[in-house]
Length: 248
Image 1 (cartoon, rainbow, N blue to C red):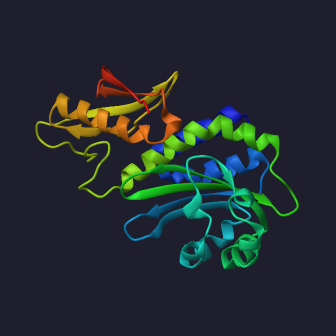
Image 2 (tube, rainbow, N blue to C red; image 1 turned 120 degrees about the horizontal axis):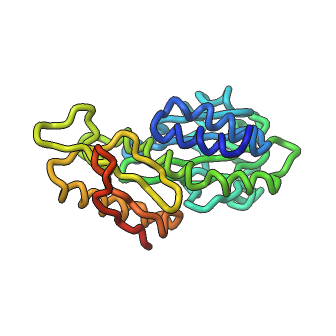
């Protein structure tokens, strides 16, 4: 499959959570690895709220959610930089880790390349690329990551926006039916390419919509990956209302 199709499939996941399994399977194939995992953690309950696994670990998803997530020493250490498990935790720690011995190795995985894709006040999204036992990560994996890095982060951020509780909506109130007197605005992310906001959010005034754009840009600035991008605010006719640069 052409790699441009991989980016397109990941972009589909930004607007449709049902596209994540296909996105992970396609990424696994393109990178020539053993599998991948998308894990959404609820920061309030400290539990896994959603998880999608592909490849070697697909059949062990429920085991991770039910038990091994609570004893996973790697997940809390993952930040916004892609980091290998083998470089993050010493072998002495892994040798006595229940998670590593009874879950990771049982899945047939030897190493994981992980990253935190998105974080909001209520959720954290981590992503891992799994390599099978007996193989190491190749240069092709790095090339695939370079290709999909921004799309993955964008899709993850849009996903957790839909999970946000009603009292906290980073992109405004995204009800299907707008309140009386409210208008729908869209908050696209651009830097040469556009990462569209497919659903939009309703606000009672243009000023409120622009304030939300500023808040979104401020939030994204905490993740250096988005530096230099713009939050583009548009109305439902597609007319650009304003743009806010994301700066550190």
